[in-house]
Every structure is written in structure tokens, then in C-alpha cells.
Length: 204
Image (cartoon, rainbow, N blue to C red; front, top):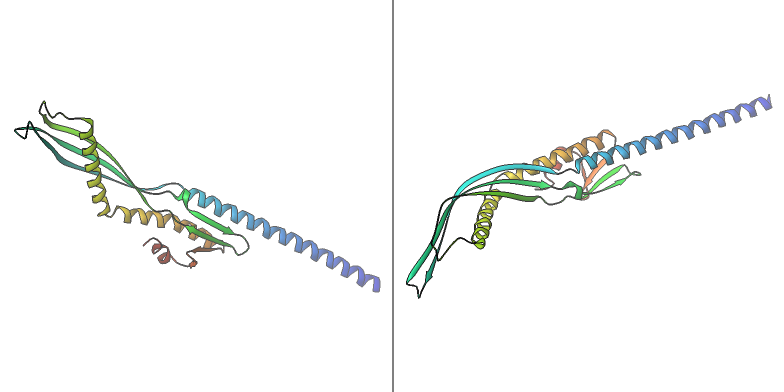
């Protein structure tokens, strides 16, 4: 009887040990799988988020030079149809994140600032120039710089950056949903993200 009890206890301990070992291994595999999935999601989000807009406007360029002791004026002018494609981008490949498997926490360390890119195109009409004041390369550079600056000002006054921010939030929301569904926590600026409203306030 005594041997039977000893044998039974030994068998019970063996089965329990195997069960704990298998359970722990299963949990570890699940943790590794979850970590890999979150990392993959972050890498996918790392693509550029682009908000795009198109602008067009007509500009007039005039230049006058006084020659021969201000006795002669040499003039040139042009009408320019300027078209521009503008993009506001978040290069989320530069977003810094940290994954802590022990605490099951994904921390967004930093979010890159938006980048505004402007791609102007110019069509010149009604170009007139005097022999003593012809169009030169520097004139075209002045035109390009001036018009691009005006487009940039218009973009800053528009909702383009706001639209880009909303796109950013929608991408970060994917990370939030994934981490929450797996029982993980998303943290930014030492604050635990618990709802979408907190995400929307990140870049305001």
C-alpha cells in the first residue's frame, strides 16, 4: 500500500511537471508569436502616410532695369500658370518604438514631424523682354522660389496638415487595436493609451 502511494505521488508529480513545462512552453510560444505580429504591424505602418493636394494659380512676373544713368528702362515680364502637387508626409519608418515582452507593453518613443513637399510645374505665357534685359536663369530661379513660397503659405493656411494628422491617427489606431486585442498595453509620452480620443490628441 505504501509503495502504491509513493508510486502514485511520483506519477502525479511527473504528470504535473510535464503539464507545467508544456503550458509554460505554450505561453512562451504565444508571447513570441504575439510579439512578432506586433512588430510586423509596426513595420507595415512604417510606410509613408501621404496626404496629397493639387493647386493652380496664375502669376505675373515683372522686372525693370534702369540703364545709361537711368535714362533708359529695359523691361521684361511674363505670365506664369503654376501648378503644384503638395504632399504632407509622416515617415513612420523613423517612428521609434520599444516592445517589452515582460510587461506586454508597446511604447511609442517618438513620432516624426510632418514633412511638406511641393512639386511645382510652370507654363510661361505672354513673355516679353527687351534686348538689354533678357530672361536669364536667375529670373527663373526667382520665379520658382517666389511661387513655391506662396504655395507653401497657402498649404500652411489650409487643412492639409490636419488631414495628414488624421491619417496618422488612423494608422496608429491599428497598432492600438492590435495590442489591446492581445492583452498588451500601448504607451506614448508616459501615458497609457486607453481610447481613440487619447490617440487623436497625440499630435495636437
